[in-house]
Image 1: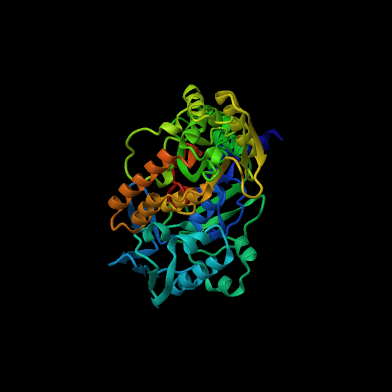
Image 2 (image 1 turned 120 degrees about the vertical axis):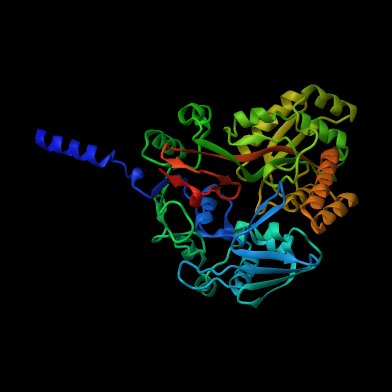
Length: 479
């Protein structure tokens, strides 16, 4: 027995293997939560976006801050009048070997628009095309109902990637989500195994030859990366937030997520018709307490109306309604003769942090505030947790105004002008005007925006992240 043990130890020393398969040459191991789905047009969770970000290549990447568009599956996205748009495609194939054509996009977008998936409003409410046709195998023609410069930003949405003809014919969306076929740098090797994960094989431009995706809980995965038995954990739990810096040094990253939360005021309700009242409530919110408490360090206190994921240009000035100033908030409510007492309503998934928000408002403003599930049209303020499908500011600004019933003519005109702007610089200036008007009138008060965290082992390098994919799996290298 001693001889066998000695031989095993010698073999271990020679191979350099620690008993973990995380150090296999060319194989990247990644810990994630169970994705809600792998159907790209119906995604709203970090894990699903991370996986589909490797399985599909979008038409372009869009940076809202700079307004820069980087073509990817598209060779170009152009227009002479911002009404008639032309998209030229690069040659590509799906993982099943069939070609990706302009008709692939036409048929996919028709299915998305009809299915009422998460990304459906990108086509029906934001793009608003009168006609989308394939004028050649590699050419898409899009005719809008008005001039819009936001088309490249909208077409960059990860939910608008193409689907192969097989699933468009069968409409077996559930079956497809278990064994998705994309056009990206990696393909799924066999069906996805719920509760376990799946393996991605490189078929395009990617550093790792293979990526093993393991489903589990973030706390356990964090410890596995620390122990060297997992290469990367795509989520860091709140209780590890402080330890992360000491445990991993510079081997961690955070990035803005496409989500933000707001306190929406019913501006048509006489009780909240006065902007002074709305500003008073905004100043009574202790955002830092929410971040450190029920949000478990998975969010940043709002510093502006637009979150980082779709804030154009450089910010100027501070966001006074984003501040916590209980004394000033109480003074404003007194000035407006606020009658004292309201209910704050919440939707699914927001109960815990909304109740904490309500407790804080009561303490800070010395008014009666209660919390209740949202049902029908709320007669008081409500919390709104927005999940964005694009990086365009137009999506969020229009949704916030609709949620509050805010119908100011100047706001609507400037928002339409920003949508129609010919250049990113012009659009950015107009969006800032719109944002500043909302901060002045305050139909909605910004609360927080989400962010993601990842940690990785010493053999991992070149980790970058984007709002809609998190860590870019194709770009991660191994030593």
